[in-house]
Length: 333
Image (cartoon, rainbow, N blue to C red):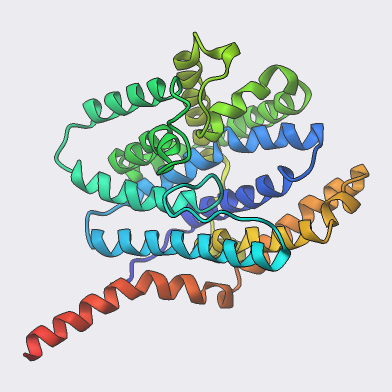
């Protein structure tokens, strides 16, 4: 049964997937400006994406969702293998180790299953234990990309918190004009700090990305920095919710319902641009850097078109179709 979509949350999803693409574009260029913008984006965009995913988590068809998410994860890795071979780059395929884009789909599969398993548990102990494990994990460099364990531990609190928040009350809380103005101002100040005071703040990148152990310089106070990064992500994620428009924005809102296809395809296009050296040619000047960001925005809009969703839509529906066919066979027998 289809549920009526809410423009506000699709607007949020579009804004976040746009930041995902822009962030990946920025990370390909050695630029002080881009490093500052990258830090700003990563301070909240992935935690907020997972939080919103948690808001819409439902403990139904869990097996179908887990299979779908894991299937898309595997497809992403296989397509990367094919693309790397075509471009002449080396690529080591490992099903359970990942440092790049596919990790998110693996995390969604794990978070969906884990939340269902914890459906009767008390929220506070679950969050407390998870935060403790996330803080401890930073002391072990072996907890990294295998099973994406570091990211799973670091980011699960955001997803789980989303499953425990009343979405209607959150919408009402964010729907205050003064909060929108204050949120916009605070986000702009944070962006300015990330750009102009980058040298003092850039160490937080390790914490926002979620896959790194504590550096030697932050080793003793690693858990405090981890908790601080959680606070930063939660605060600015909330302000983003406050400033995102509530009304239907036409194609942009529609694109917010198609974020998975953008996530699936964008890095392949980016790698082709990198292979041709477009990023180094364009980003030599400041106007060129702006053009590089414009290309990221244009790619996001392009990949939001319906044809690019065919593959991911089919993968999402496939487990349900298999179950339906099996059910018909049983009833027919």
